[in-house]
Length: 163
Image 1 (cartoon, one colour):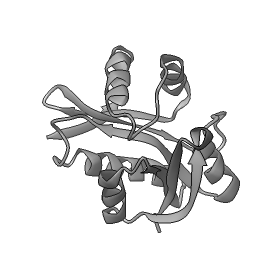
Image 2: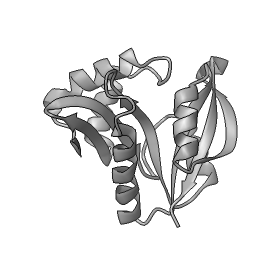
Image 3: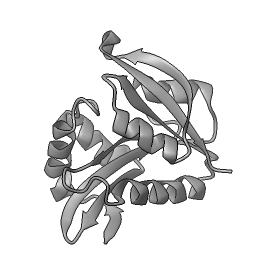
């Protein structure tokens, strides 16, 4: 059974290791940035499956002092949203409902804060086909694209309406 719960300080090293193993599907996560998320992000939760970490999701709301180009896009162009900065499901747990459990929990989080949509981005260069399919099945639609990391990556900017 998948349990979604708040991350604990002693799990930050494991969260970072999971993130780094998932590159290039997700961006690098320096320890300083993870520490910032641990202090500032209103949503830093893990998936626990029988006592083992199966993944994590970091989410933000408008008004954060966060330098992400993708977060800035949603801040400038949308209102009433909650942003998924990154979601990682560990090897061995993919296809087991962890991603669905995270998004169900994050939707509750967003609704509790009055958000009418969830926003995120998925790499299209390099292409993250698994994530693109997952988000399409979950009801997300593309609202734009942009190059990031000095042109090294291109992302699809996605929105899921909650109404």
